[in-house]
Image (cartoon, rainbow, N blue to C red):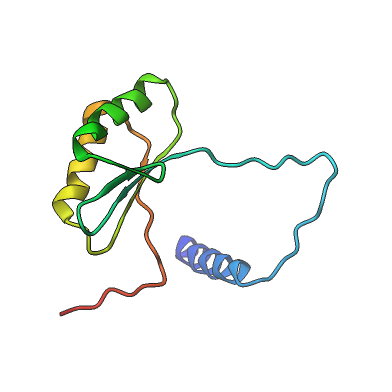
Length: 117
């Protein structure tokens, strides 16, 4: 019972923390760092883009192998249009896995609600 009360209080506190508007302090010794990543886009018309440049689907395997062979562990971000062919998206997942890429991220837009038919 005590654990249940603890989790209820801590989860409520966590939600309230996110709602507080804060201003972070500044420091002269702070660094700005940018997150490095590779990006693949899948368009609704079956187009594939790597780092903003359209590439043929056939060359995507070679591109993914090149990422893995470079030894970089930067995330591979897979963005797909919501109307993209699901088979194309799964194909990219499969190609990344075959290439040995394990750091694959699929971002979504949390503001859009799913509509049921």
